Picture (tube, rainbow over the protein chains, first blue to last red):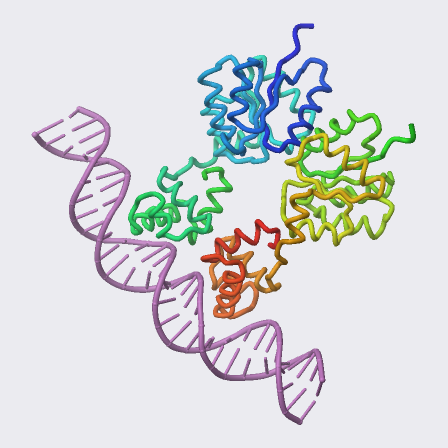
Length: 204
Length: 204
DNA sequence: ACCAAAAGATGACAGTTGTCATGCGGAATG
DNA sequence: CATTCCGCATGACAACTGTCATCTTTTGGT
């Protein structure tokens, strides 16, 4: 047999991180050479260990898994990236692909799929959750502009028009305009519903 | 050495379930005798295997981990229950304790704590995340009435006063009153922030 | 330099939301 | 039986939101 596949794991919940490592260590041909609790740490870890594959969560403090994937793709093009996440959102998948990830796997899938996925990706194949892939191609594009996203995000946090305006150095009226645009684009009845829809699609 | 500790795991994300099982199987004195993807399955599993300890997530389809803990406490009092969850919410902890759980552990903690926790609980000790325990005792009680909770929940989903009134067979004004009460009790500036706060504390 | 598209601002208007004082009727408690 | 409390309703008012039409200022492309 060749060398073992060298893997780095990034996941913010320590216990899950440890558990995933234990899972992978049961495979004879895979070895976990590094673990990180966030994107920034993962990046350092990759620079020193040069793994074959990076497996990363998306929602992490410091640096999101999507940003991490982009950085890795740019600075360490030989490292293959697999996104491992709870969220079956077409928007996330799309961003992951744009960021140069080779795999997108859901935490819902059986545990056995993780090692399979790592092996395939290391051979240069792409592995994408089939249901999600279908939805992502057929499904709608993110219709929001950057400003609309910023405004809608804050509105979803419970901030008022005035507060948002201050934070973004806009006039209150402009904030209302962006919000109104976002609401109509998303077919929502108000800002809260709009934020919910956007979150569900992975656009926030 | 005595018999191994017999453990059943309940967790809705299959990959995490498998990973946690792999983690526990690395311990020489612990054996995972059953796995379940939801509370109902776990209950069946417990009836047939009679484990020493049940480790369960909270947010699962079919039957929540908190409901499961209560059922287990009632029907199988010899089985110790450990709640393993993402959520550091005083409200959840309180409900878990009321439901007869012996342990409350966060997925944020190092992987090694899981087996420690299981061993202690099996010896009859209680194991509760220390930070959370402090917050739960010192921290506030849930100040919301049932109506306020119903109304606030729906408001957080983006529903308007009118819609909520219809659903709950109340007048629109009454809905506004409940919402206003909830907002002031929670020290929020509006319904969205109020809903956020209540969710964060585990009161929704 | 020119034109068109964007980003942003303004103002007006209706509808929704947050607050508060008050009123009503049915438990519950004495 | 009277009293009090609680759940619910009403009405009034100010503040905030959502929608639109219109306008100015950048910005980018040719």
